[in-house]
Length: 188
Image: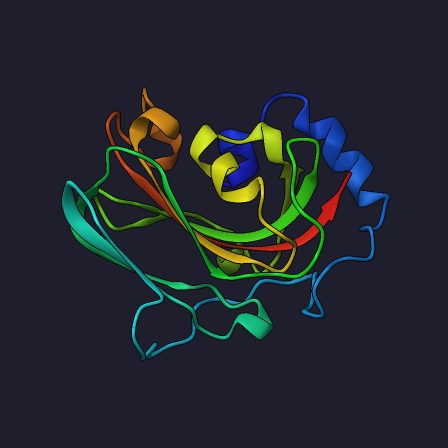
């Protein structure tokens, strides 16, 4: 199930239509802004960020960021946090994302309880476009204030994600969700 179907407000459809007809403000990074690459096989190197949860541990390792490859997310399950935590793994140099911005993002979402990917633009090979204000609060925190070109890790407790769960995405009430993402473009 796509992130936009999971976390966008109903108004997102109109924003998506506008985004498809417009270009960015010229501040995007030099990376390809039309595709997302899956995590390379055999990821090595030290994690860029490790999070100790109230249960388990999460680690993010940047892979081939220049090709929009997914950061590798490694979890000790069950993984659970009690507050949203965001880390800029690689800082971009484009325009800053605001609540009014519509973004194009490569992302991968992992359920902290099961360790399973529940949604991935990387696996689909193409970024998703949505308004920064139209996603769950924890994902919004990972976007707003970041610059285009940034690669970001975020761990989101149930309260800032899906407090009642999202059965269509195999997310149960109380599940922590984890995202690795790269902001490719911003409009607005």
